[in-house]
Amino acid sequence: MSTHSTAPVHWKLVIDAADPHAQADFWAAALRYAAEDNSALVERLLSLGALPGEATVEYHGRPAFRDLIAVRHPDDPHDPDTGTGLGRRLLFQRVPEAKTTKNRLHLDLHPGDGRRADEVARLEALGASVLREVTEPGGAWVVMADPEGNEFCVH
Image (cartoon, rainbow, N blue to C red):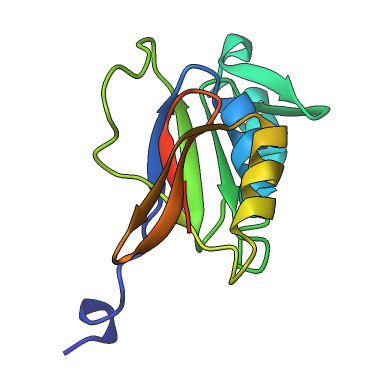
């Protein structure tokens, strides 16, 4: 049996967005992740004629894909040729429609014991909003929304 058949599956969480770059900035700051730098790949594809200029934007002074950008855990490996993370990642992709209903999937952030209130304040300063505070026998948390209205929880 090959080791590939038992290896864990590599994954990324893909999130629809009206403005993927603004969402990447928010979530990179919220999670203390790094926005991926795909500029070498973008420049290579442009020079080969494999990517039209209108499919790119300038992002933090570098060429980037117009319709998608990812953030990655800064300690995880990445491919230096493409800038693509090889570990924990969130990929934001541009879609034309706005969010209309409750998320079926969300992130839970765990800042550590006694740090919830400070973390909620930090996230609000980044552009998130508090939707409600929950206290149940199983625990307490704050339900928040990112700048595009996607719900997440702070425990």
